[in-house]
Image (cartoon, rainbow, N blue to C red; front, side):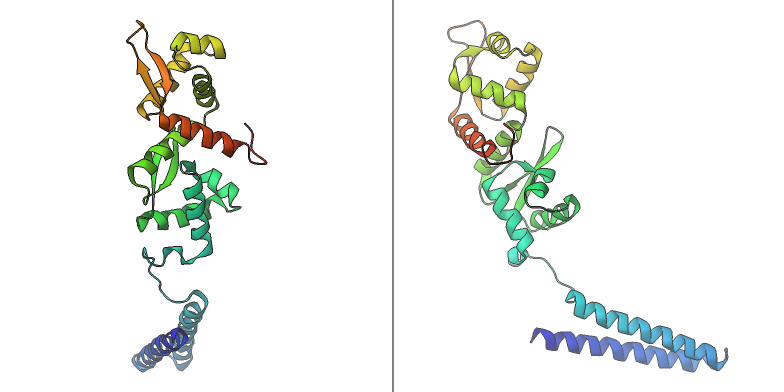
Length: 230
């Protein structure tokens, strides 16, 4: 049935071009030599053939909808990867799925346009997560994107192992500048990876939240996959 529709469309286009060709030749007879008329006709026929070939090669005009957007293997693979690793950025996704970044970006735009996937800029990179997961998926994506920074991961892991430490203790233990630690803690606090407590100290001490613990463990497991640096 699909091929019949293509044939009907192609024949219709061909007849339109033939009609235009005839009209052009008739109109041109009063103004140009017959050889010019033949040239015009040939050019129009060639254009008609090109249109017909394009319909057969590319399947005509197709609209991507939420119902058919995952019908292609590459977009289904992108969807599955983002479902497993929310917060992944473009180049990481392209690398893991062996795609050119431009190709991955094009298909990701289709997933966004059909409201299957959403993106957010984190640390200068666009990261992706599924719409289906709602607010929790967004939080997890942001959290995992933050933990892709090595310093952030080290701070989080230190607090997982030593909860209740303040900023200067963390900086000293990890041999990091306290401004660097403060910057990452602020991001993790806003992403709900950490909670701060000032009830027993003039300086806030920090504890991983349930989300922080879960994302930290998932991300550690992710980094243990073959071919990934910790």
